[in-house]
Length: 329
Ligand SMILES: NC(=O)C1=CN([C@@H]2O[C@H](COP(=O)(O)OP(=O)(O)OC[C@H]3O[C@@H](n4cnc5c(N)ncnc54)[C@H](O)[C@@H]3O)[C@@H](O)[C@H]2O)C=CC1
Ligand SMILES: O=C(O)[C@@H](O)C(=O)[C@H](O)[C@@H](O)CO
Image (cartoon, rainbow, N blue to C red; front, side, top):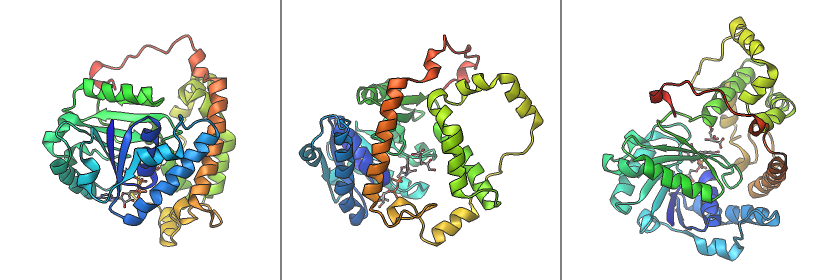
């Protein structure tokens, strides 16, 4: 499939690699020439790390160069594309403006997919595009994290969503199809709730970023990887969960729309790995090298988990799904 990706940042360059590994032809563009120029090095570093662990699907460095090409203009990028992926800044107005530009340039039958983390992008799209518009939300790094949230627009037939889901499964991914848009889908909503509590703990001086990560890595993380949250609840015992709910010992944080801790970091230029520091100081290490080290460890962990297998799979079955039809995913 010919694929166009708009935005070559943290996600865009990695998505280009994912689809190249999947055997597709990718055209990549970015409004920032420096970001676009950075993409080949980031992609090759990630590809080489995957290849070293036999996880690159046979994609060679030359194959990457042939399968992912950089383009300066939208018109060139989306010409003869069957799937156009938007991975630009998470702000409604730039996305709306881009969708309008793309509408005039992309093939009539091309799919339009947004990688948005939380936004209901469908009202931002030209109505005529909605019959072939979806949210296709990936998790970073998308060449290792297999979950992909898939939500068709209200006008997009289920068959179109299922066709894309089938292609993602062929690529070894795990699409989670939602029948209706829900900001944050499932995993991002859970992550968002966790983030809100993290910011509250830091803003109110209860914990440092390092203490939060220690609590997750040495506490929650191990069981989540094997059991998820609900099967873990079965081992905790549901009565205790009921007591904890009834006791209501504290209220979850009210979303404030900002965090003093996060604002301070941003004011000091601590924007994350790409800047060499965020909540942690990465010692000026090259971002691609840090990502390669993250990927090497994630691959080893993923391989071990494949061998161990999730425990939820050992269950005889799940409880009956008593949701009403209209509320089902
Ligand atoms: N960073 C992450 O871990 C994840 C991000 N996402 C979502 O993916 C999208 C992109 O996020 P990131 O890759 O993190 O952002 P980013 O800031 O790293 O990259 C966005 C890129 O889009 C480019 N851009 C902005 N406006 C443009 C336009 N009109 N035309 C062409 N290029 C344009 C920017 O120059 C930038 O390089 C957002 O919607 C975000 O919510 C989804 C999953 C994970
Ligand atoms: O964690 C991820 O990769 C995705 O869930 C994302 O969409 C972004 O990180 C987002 O959650 C940041 O708020």
